[in-house]
Image (cartoon, rainbow, N blue to C red; front, top):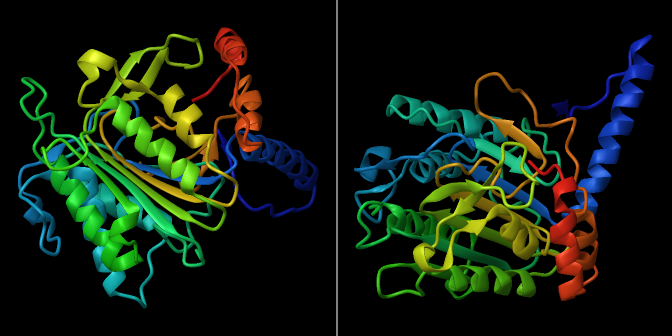
Length: 341
């Protein structure tokens, strides 16, 4: 892929590096047009991997864990973030947080590789922040945990606890207010995480968020892969989220998440996602990536990345417009020219 680094011109290499950064600037310009907001996503694993539940979340030494079971990704991240929060003189970098997550997961026998994806290139060697320190606006969150209660097979045990543990963290360590946090759980007490309710919660937070605001979205549940139906996936599959009523209403494809969520946030909004589910590496189709595989040392973007016809959709969303039915039909018919991750 195309690595994103700082140029260090030297002798005859200068012209090569100049061409390289012209290419990098062109990709960044496309990313800024297609995805106006600053979006980061921490995923529990790569697209081809599955994530794991842990039966005893207390083994991750979280402060007052909400329950015994939880997602391995969420639990590992929280262990690191609480420790980092307490050691204010020893700030971790983005790279260190991801690599420490990998170490914790490996020590527990999990093979999944955490990944950071973003709409803008991040210097992974700089101080990690789940919410940037300079945020001056409102902090909002949508947190979804689906245990698929009563489903057999497929029932999970830790997703509600993931949400409760992460909710406590963002309130206690980042100043989120309870009234600005939407929680969807299939526990009979919260809003049910159906397809309609999930998309409604996402639409609400998109419409409310203004430049200078921070958004945090956490999803813990099943993730899936479905045969790509519009030709925009290199591997032939769309990555998906699996709502509670997926058998009746279907899964939520990455294309749906792009059009209703990723491309819809306003410029100046900073959005952080944690996707603790299977096949989540590119579920938001963000171009800049870093995988904690022990080999990568910076973010990179595939050299053949192209936003194609979705650029038109993103322009409409950025301008606050709505696409007509004809526009949507045209987009669907031409989307085969895309090369989204």
